[in-house]
Structures are given as C-alpha cells and as structure tokens.
Image 1 (tube, chains in turn yellow, blue):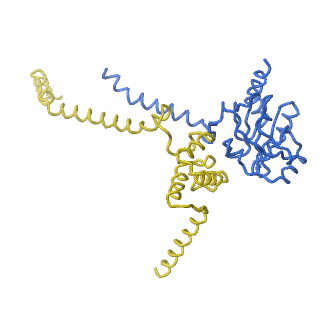
Image 2 (cartoon, helix red, strand yellow):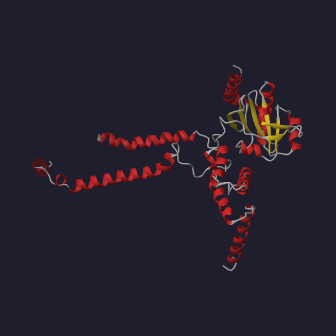
Image 3 (cartoon, chains in turn purple, red):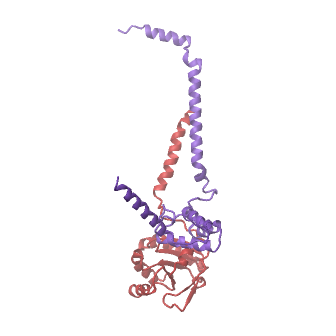
Length: 157
Length: 179
C-alpha cells in the first residue's frame, strides 16, 4: 500500500503529460478549444479505421487535426469543417452518419428490431394467458371424458 | 397462415445470414472515394524535377491519365514501381504525386529505379493529398481527358490486377477520348 500510492500518483501524473503531448494547439478561447475537441472526437481516421482522429497516431490523423485547427482559426463553422472533410473522404469519416435513405436502416434498424421483438413477445404471452384461462382448455368434452374413463379402466394383461 | 408464421423466424434468420455472409467478403479497408465523378482538385505545385516549373490541374487535361500518389517512405510503392515502369513503357500515361516526401531522396529514387511519370508533382506538405482524400500511399487515380476522376485504386498495383481490373477502366477512358 505504501508503495502503491506513489506509483499511482506517478502514473496519473505521467498520463496527464502524455495527454498534453498530443494537444499542442493553442486556442484563442475556450469555446474554440471545445469545438476542436468535439470535432476530433466525432471524426474518424480513414487509415486506422476504428479510431477517431483524436486518438490516432497515424500521419493522416495528424494532418487532419492540423487541417481542422487551421479551419477553426479561419473561423469556419463545425458544419463547414465536417463538409470539407466529407467531400474528400466521404461519409466514412463521420462517426455520426447523416440521416438519409441509405442510413435509415442504420439509425432505426435496432429500434425496429427491438419493437418487433417486444411486439412478438406480447402477442405470445397474451395468447398463452387466453388459452390457460379459457374453460375449453381445462374442461373435457363428454366424448373425451368417456375415452379417458375407458383408458383408465382398461386392465393391461 | 399459422404455418407461414412459424416459418417467419427461419426467414428472418436466413435474411440476416445472407447479409452477414456477403459482408465476410467485403474488404473493410476499401473506402468508396468521395471524389469519383468530380474534377481533379485544383492545385499549383512545383515539379519535382524542376522546382522552377509550376504544375496545375490544367496540365492533367487532354488525355486520360493515371495519377499515382507515392513516397520514398512507402515500402509498397517500391514494390509497385517496376509495374509502373512496365505500364509506362507500354504507353500508359502516368503522372506522379510525390506525397509528403523530401526532394533529394525522391529524385534519387526516380534516377535509380527509372521514372515512369510524365509529370512529377511535388506535394511536400501533402495539401494535394488532403484534397484528394489520400489516406495511405500508394493510391492511383484514373483521370479522364476532361480532368474528371473516374476511378480510384488504393493499394499496390500488380500485373494481374492491372490486367484483370484496371486495364479495362483505362481502356474505356481511352475509347471515350477518341470518338
């Protein structure tokens, strides 16, 4: 325990340094810094496909961060910056794809599947309950009763 | 009706299975280019072999061309280079974009390994590469006689690939250019 604490403190301090090493851009105001952070987290690195450009060390991600910083300094809006990159790299670079005919299934597919499943479950449960509570299922008809009696009375040899 | 309903889960399963099976054979690294059908982006960059000379997108027009993005730091480019030499010898019109590279080793490369390029564009800062949506060299763009990007291939071109996939595309651009 006595050793663990300094190790932890050191670890946290070092990771803080690493974080700082990635971000070397200076911003005029806090709002721009926030916008930069959202943009680099929402945009995807074209080379290392499962990382956003904030996390990636690929040269292309560095270039894109520089490009985003440049455009922010020029005073362009978030939409303009995203559009600028989509024109070059396609919708692929967006972790938040736009809502259109092609991405309709992507946006609403999971919810539709969930609702469909819940609907099916509801129907099944209701039907079961109806069968259990209906007198037809619990009571035998006279013919059935007779057949049951003969079956029970029958003496096996 | 009830019987059909019983088959519904199977039908859904088969639908999903077909969808996922098709997905197995798609290369996730292959991105559709956003630039196909659009004009080659405007640029004004020095020639690698003659820095006094400026090359612009207008120089690419006139006849169909391959624009190959390469760099000396890119190992697959070295692998691809002999293939490009052969294509150039066979009369294919190829331009080179030296992407984020240094002038001296790039020139050395061309003098050592032969220069297959008609125009050598020096994109030291990668600005043209960014406009082209390049995310890794080598990448090759097929540009028609009007300067429109018609196809893009990401990765190393080898002879088999050229013969089977890319040559027909280039031929089509040639056919369009000579009515």
